[in-house]
Length: 187
Image (cartoon, rainbow, N blue to C red; front, side, top):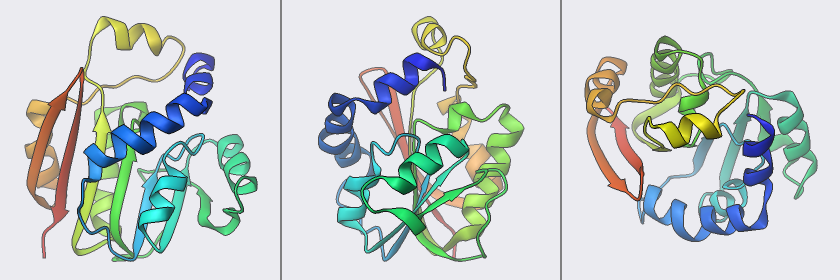
C-alpha cells in the first residue's frame, strides 16, 4: 500500500466505516462459524469487528510491518500471521469462513489472485463461506493506487474464476462504486 492508502486505512473514520457500514454489507447476518481467516488484515480496520462475531479469527497480512504492528495492538498477538494469500500457511479445511476486505486487487497479477482463490478454497472446510469487498477499475481508483499495486478484479469474470477454484453459489452485489461477493466451498 502507498502512504495515502496506509493513512486512510489507519484512521478512526475508516475503522468506523468498516465496522458500521462495510462489514454488515459484506457478511450480513451469515453464520461465520467458529474460525475465520481474515485475508490482508492491513492496519486492522476490520479485525476488531470480526473478532466480536467469531470466536477465533486468524489475521493474515503480507507486509511484515503491518503484521507486527497488528500483533502488538489490542492484545491480538498470536492471532496474526505474516504470509501470502497465494500460498497460505495453513492446513486443509482449517477455517469455517474467510473474508478479504480491499485486498485482492493488491495481488500482483490475475494468476496470483487465482492462486489465492484456490488456496482459500483449500483452507476452508466443506460448506465454508468466502466473503470479499473490492473496488472496480477506474481512473479514480488508479490515481489512489499510484505507487501501489492495483490489479482490479473484473466482476463479470468472477463466477468463472471462483468456479475453477472449486467454489459455488456466488452472490455479487454493487453499491456506491464498489462490489461485494460471497461464495461457498463446494462439499
